[in-house]
Image 1 (tube, rainbow, N blue to C red):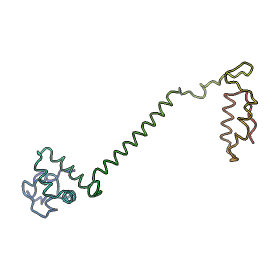
Image 2: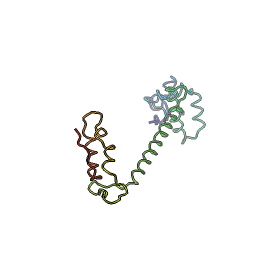
Image 3: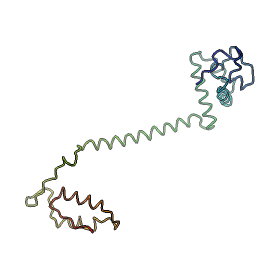
Image 4: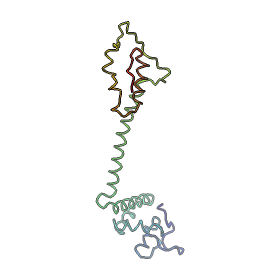
Length: 191
């Protein structure tokens, strides 16, 4: 938190503010830094501000602002100074670019998920119990009717085996699908 010694520097035996402590000077009653840099944590924050901006420039910036805007200015100075020490070339702009890149990636991911969701929502969800197998009667000229001899080449045993891995999950799934939705088709027995 940026609130520090609100009573001013050296009054009441409290000692100097963090800025005056860093600068090794006596903290006067109207010290511009005293309300924002306390004696404990304020010294490290002010050291960063002093290194990047200088004590004189920071003091001039604060004195030009009305009192109600100074806290925001001190927070901004401290943030920019710490960012500039961490990254001397880009400072806080490097962090902003990183955040902007994250936002763009998340927007792309959100658009992708929304597109997938809209695709999924087009199809009504039905439980397996509600699904009815399509009517398949080879005696009548059905739109999707196939002769079992045509399926032999498509659903041959070599297509159902998974390169000799011995995993029967695929074969079982295919068998269930064909028996449920294509009841007239007989698959060869898998070994």
